[in-house]
Length: 398
Image 1 (cartoon, rainbow, N blue to C red):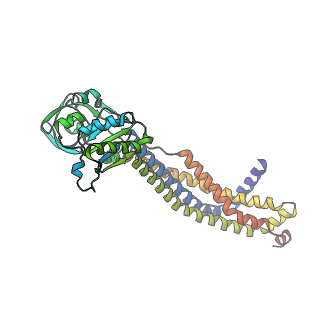
Image 2 (image 1 turned 90 degrees about the vertical axis):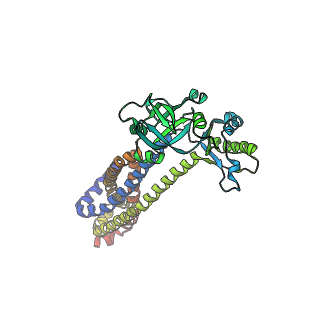
Image 3 (image 1 turned 180 degrees about the vertical axis):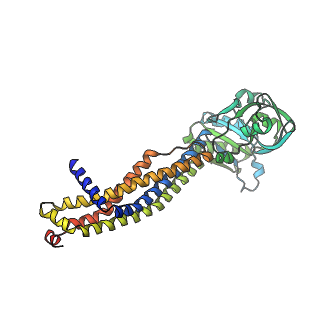
């Protein structure tokens, strides 16, 4: 350890003698390291924010709907009675089977009136979404087709302002529905706009009895084990074909796989952008190799004296490689600081759009230090070998 520290001390002293040149050489390393850290850190932070928000919605279902490419999709329309049949056929392999419709309906409270997305829901909840008031749809609401509703925070502000929404009645297509719960705001305006921040939710039995008498838009199946999602989707289609005929075609989309694919795309984009930024590191490495070759030429006589008093090739090579590593490492550490500052600044802006995000500080530090040492060693090898192979007699005559 003392042996290596001595080389580090010599390397620092050599770089300090030409500090202006060393600082200009480090500039390329600073820019390259900062760009990689910033791009990698920001992409990781954004991905973590999106993933965490999506995870807060709980288990994602299998969506089943008629294949629109078949000759007559209307003949394969999923009926409300199919929900119980599919649930019975799937038995324990499905945690819940729910009907779904997408409708925008007139909603009013007193003089305030607007068209808002009204959605059905069951009592199966795996999400981590918080309630600012009241509760979610319960099993008793479903069993009794209760005229109750759960609304999002935007709807509560629209109709009730700063007053409590609980116990009040909204009119939806003429019917009166008591507000029993209000969802808290989801952190992140981007996710709010993506998920739809204004929504009124009713028990699906109430929804079917009061608002929609026709077929379902699609069927939602929540598998008991996410690993068996594909098999559960196929079993649900088989049961639907039992009622609607073997020629009926349906499509089962595993939304969890789609989200996983989306996160993978974000990850690949982050790696790709980081790879583009690594070109700056290549340029910085070439600059380090160039300046070390100049240093070898300037210190030829010094190398000859060292060899004359007993230094071997390994000693000379180690000295110059250590100088290259110290030069690269100093630039990398400064670049890491700049990159982290840029990541923190971007993270504060992203948190307003995506909600709470996580920055992998340890991973960023490891990448910065690892790349810095690797660049120093890789581009310092040739100058170090050239210095080590100098003939001591010719070096002394230089």
